[in-house]
Image 1: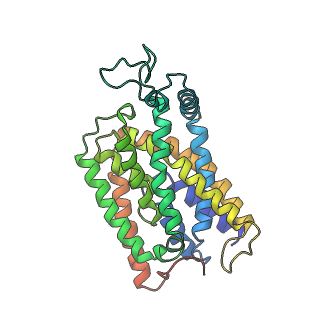
Image 2: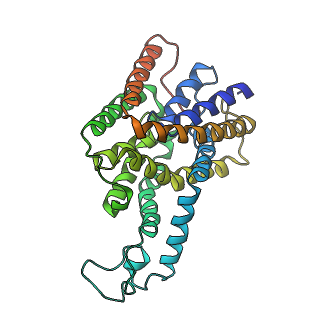
Image 3: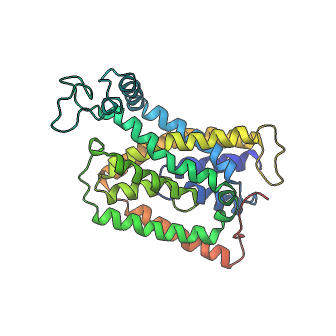
Length: 306
């Protein structure tokens, strides 16, 4: 892979990571079109470190608030009972000081920290269990065509029929797990991590911005964990034939960071005024283009680094 190809793939990663159109599908498709073949799951995971660094910088104040509140609650600052330590405060109608000190209400930021942890469990477990399939079988472009279309339709329905009344202050453990299960589906290229979680959020009645904000925050542990796991896994190992080298991967990661930060700003402004329908129509169009490319023999359906 040349430096220019790495820049292009980093640009694709940064442009598509936060949009509900599947960055892994785009990297898979563009990699084939530019002649460097499928860059592989490891390249995708490592370059996502760059885009998640953009999330950390953009949401740094919110992340800092969550971390401080989480550690304070865990240390017993809000009470020594388990409900206080997870940010839930006393039971409704209860004044039991074992659960929370008098006058202390539920700490939403502390609870948010736990919700992000619990919501990250599904994708971690499934990612480890099905690692071999994720790197090979699930990268088949015919499957990508299906996921682009089907999950695009789900996003459209959720955007049309979702109540869009709930803010993140109404997040519960059950809704956090639902978000997490939706995120786990993004292990299949074409689903879209942000698309899956945003669809789940809209279906549960969250506003467009609330669903997007939580989607970005929820991704941090799982995506960074996956990226660093692939990074340390490949260190010291010979680079497989056809796989991008370290130089290309680093270039793509840096480009993805810069572009990703700009996309976060633009995306949140767009969804504040418009619906997700343009992204749905784009998914349908992309699926159609991939079908044409496959049938015409311009790209091969089978992915993964041999």
